[in-house]
Length: 68
Image (cartoon, rainbow, N blue to C red; front, side, top):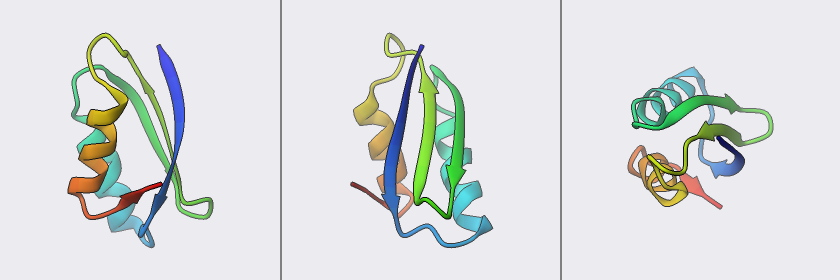
């Protein structure tokens, strides 16, 4: 398993949290995803053999948020 913390801009409410956690959590290979609104951060634990970091970033981007 690999763990990363992504800096994500544009999240401001519980809807944002659910959108990001829900979409990233559905990706095959993602073990856990936790949004921290105050820190504008998303902690993701994933299996790099099943899903790439790029796919995770694209999924967050598709929800309308900017990954820095």
